[in-house]
Length: 74
Image (tube, rainbow, N blue to C red; front, side, top):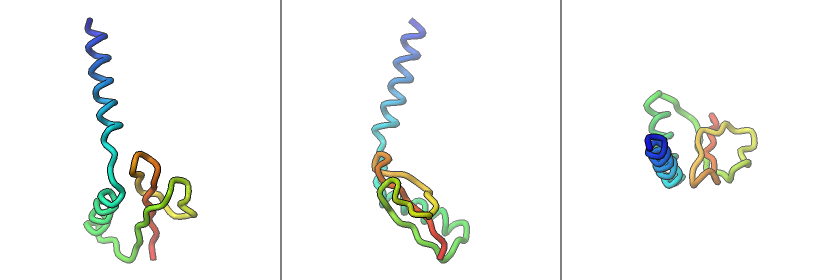
């Protein structure tokens, strides 16, 4: 019985994690705020399709993993 309850609890947590899909613009704004708080200047953040980072550093994924947010210093 304990194993069943534990399994159901873990399944519930896993389901809610997959349901929480963050929009790209919201995540991009959060990353931008963190960079500004750290004093980083002269950079660009760009939302691209997954796998199209083209040498830029990937700093986040959004929209269920179908898009990536890239960082490049200017």
